[in-house]
View 1 (cartoon, one colour):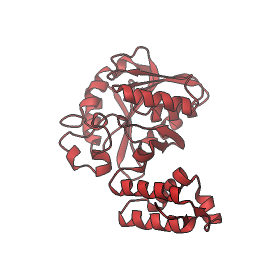
View 2 (cartoon, helix red, strand yellow):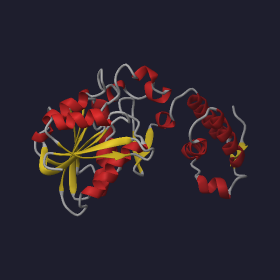
View 3 (tube, rainbow, N blue to C red):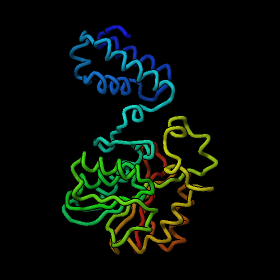
View 4 (tube, rainbow, N blue to C red):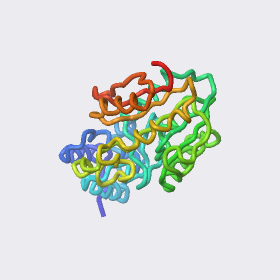
Length: 286
């Protein structure tokens, strides 16, 4: 059994261990562990450094640290991830949402009027983080999320209820457009876009903990785009737009696929790291 410890010393120990492990954000991860197990936030660490953490709580945190140092992301340890400032349940069949993907929500806010109604389609919805974040912002819109995994759909349904939009969000199990009917004002997707031969070279947290179904984009990483772009005109409203996440090195290939499909490329948008991250598409003129 671990000994009791002060809050300040615990925070210091966690930061040091995580920094030695070379995580990108040791301070943040240390705070998340303390908040999750001890229910104490950053303000408590600052205001009450001498607060004693009970031995059983300390033991839980040390166990979490040991699991983290073996490579498992905190989001997989606790089963929850923040995206667009909202909490999302994840499981072993949902992708762990990344900040890069929030660019889709940012662009939608720039393009669409929040006061109007409409319909959103999210292909490969996973945890539902993109669709639910959009519905959180666009209170007069409704949405449909599609995913091949029944377990991902379960997580998306939980997240819709958790984030107060279950009455405006539907989720169905299927492959891309196969079970979809109707027209949509906004179509979004973060499809699998990693070429299958590249997957073994990915970082441990991605390769071992993200589901292969959410990563594998076929031999060239482009298979989902080929399928979606070939059918999207049947589902995108005449004045609608579509926003798709792409890999950092896929700009030219995806642009070519857009043009070959007779779609209009409205732009390729850069993420915070300066990489091409989202393509914007419509059915009409640019």
